[in-house]
Image 1 (cartoon, rainbow, N blue to C red):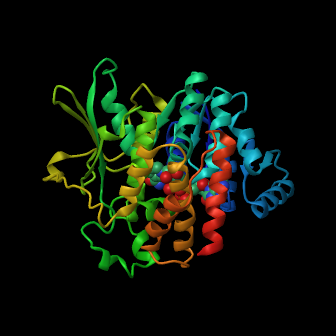
Image 2 (cartoon, helix red, strand yellow):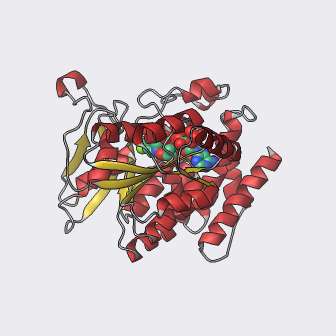
Image 3 (cartoon, rainbow, N blue to C red):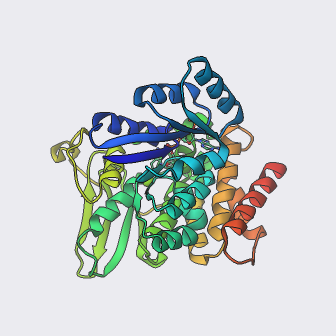
Length: 383
Ligand code: NDP
Ligand code: MG
């Protein structure tokens, strides 16, 4: 039996993980969860799984949940804020923490979990983008596994199994191309929030849906792949593959390409991360190749989708550039979702931030948090 904490249990990944746990109650015990504002969902999860440890990061929701639990006479430990996330990520009985919160807020709890020697099933890619060096160093120091949940990274991870002694030529990171594949700059000028949220292949949270529309998601994933697989940026190639059948590939020095294929269902990478190195039977719709007919590949249009280009530049430049890129993107996407800036302004804000800010301090958790805040404050005050 594996004891699990899920931070971000009420989101898209959290919900899919919980439905996996529901079908495998003999294997997984959901011991602790976090949420931000989705109080109804939290109450349902608490009741269904008899959860005893809950962290809530939104103050009002925290108070409401406390009131609800005292009214219903529920004996539950309810913790508040990032401190609360830290508590549920470090509980003695926990084996694995699934990090499915969105954004930089995942960083400190992930590091706390690593220091408490919990394995990490990592969905929260922003953590690795903003602080990959520190997270990977701590994981190595503590002998902790970082198991990718992101479908592409799960695919790469699977393609690497059994090849520890073989050199790779490159990682082929696939991308669906998002809802605006093939569009030109002029087409993107009047994109609405609703248009941008409509992803052709995956049903996801709002922030990652916008990231997929700008191709920033793929840029973040390039940096994520760099840290997870200790791979030079020169050896990571983005391949647009609109059918989303192949979830990524690894090309070895002998010329062989190993790929992972399946239907587009996040349950599979979640399950692989929770169950690694074993493969369990799953409930997902199995891929039937005769339904696929054709698979196609294209180069990404980095002239139009500048966020991808900026991400690769930030990754290669190193230092705090990825931290700045991530912070600027989080703030800009938030402003776009609040209808305060147009779609194309997202990439403009990120580019300006990378040009205007530079930092020379040493790479510590404190400096990363300070820089993240400084960038976000600047953007919220100026746009
Ligand atoms: P969602 O927006 O659906 O869910 C986000 C979760 O984080 C919710 O539980 C939400 O709580 C919580 N949350 C929101 N804001 C805060 C905050 N300020 N502090 C603490 N918790 C907060 O996102 P997704 O599930 O789509 O994505 C989660 C992560 O997984 C992201 O990093 C994303 O990039 C990554 N990922 C997602 C994929 C997907 O298919 N969805 C695929 C690959 C990676 P509440 O609902 O209570 O407000
Ligand atoms: Mg992905």
